[in-house]
Length: 117
Image (cartoon, rainbow, N blue to C red):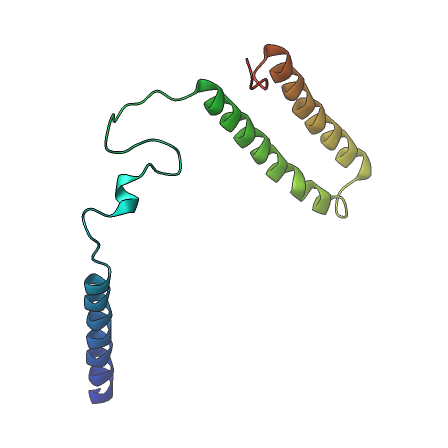
């Protein structure tokens, strides 16, 4: 019991020491050059808070997310090939790919993929 209490106290001392060192070494100057420069997204944080952004960029980002999720659904289907019926696997894979390509063609004809419009 006594050893457990010593281990607990030593652990608390080391934890507090690391937290104090972190606070001491992580202090930054207020007029840091990085704080006055724009973020990676290109928005300047010091000026206008509500800047408009490109809707085309947002649409391309949403299309990317949709296709990324569909690919993450598609990848485990190759693992199921070993344990499922070949006919069921072929029909489900074909149906999934038809929906995927159909969505891509629909976005193409609506002009969502054209960046330079």
